[in-house]
Image (cartoon, rainbow over all chains, first blue to last red; front, side, top):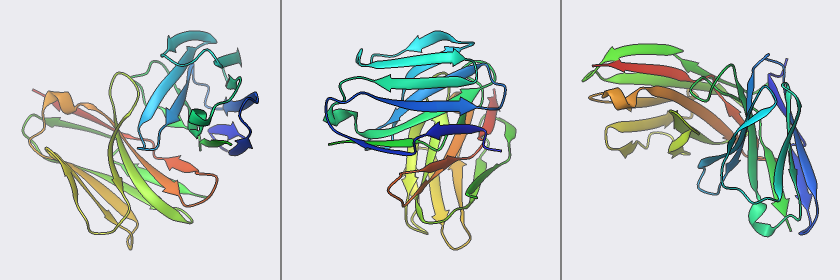
Length: 113
Length: 112
């Protein structure tokens, strides 16, 4: 019954590694997002995809690359992980544009050592 | 299963009105409750509440948490059209996984 799911929920890795976080939504939504939550709890949007097409690409390092194999999935791949990448990453989806209610996944806590 | 329920789902008021948005939760291992305002882009952080009975204020917005009754309210006084947005409530869990559960949001429309 989970509407927006993310895997893994918890990820600990060494600097320099490459890792992926997966997101899936079963709501039939057209738009999906990736957010990074910083230590002050601010949610910063990273990417947004609408029907598998990139529509928002905020200023994030090139090491972050989203991939949307279909409109129900939006995965986040991170190359050459750095200490500053440690954060909680949230996936979300909405029916239409960013003004619409977004449904959030549970978050993935990434810890880079 | 962890649950965060916001009410009402939508609300239409006129400028100058005062509104109260509700957020109730049933979670294991509560750490904090967060309120966000979502307009055109990413949700913006409003408040983080960890202790019962301590009101947090920012201008016309204020929020308070009741950990005994498991709810929080967000008050907006003297509403303005710029307050029109979706207000999200999220509960952080006190686990290593850092899991958060979001409510479905309350859509507030403030008419001139």
